[in-house]
Image 1 (cartoon, one colour):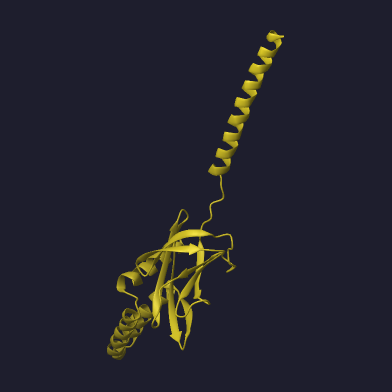
Image 2 (cartoon, rainbow, N blue to C red; image 1 turned 90 degrees about the horizontal axis):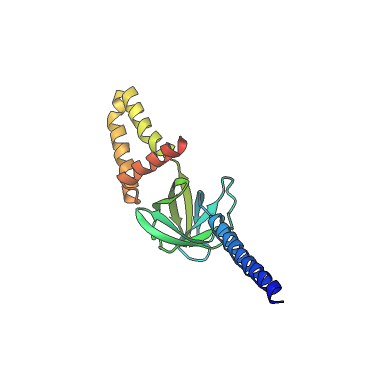
Length: 191
């Protein structure tokens, strides 16, 4: 009887070890290939729960909210690094905006850098974010230079308008480095 139970006991021990190894491999496989959530598109909207604050909403290319985005993601808002906590695709930027301003939001992940420039217009107690394309940032100065080149009498007026354009941008929080960074990011995403 002792002779028969020893091989059965050895077989049982071997099967326990194989089952344990199989469980470890299955668990490691599920961790290694877990679905990683990434934010590739986002929009800035008015925060409906707080006055003078905005929210960052993770969207897909069609503008539909990605409700599977949860957790903490790093964004750079106007040059300052912020840890934003997303819940069902929405995170709240907890800084009060006391006047109309530019907001340059940038997020970096494995698929690249995603940046958007917004002009947030404050009127009454509401905030209205407007997306500013990098093409518009290039078009205005180029149009002024082209008009000044075509009409020699327009040179002084073009210089004055360009100075007003620069003052407006700087006064509302769009610095020269951010201006060029927005254009360069737009060009990178085009190619």
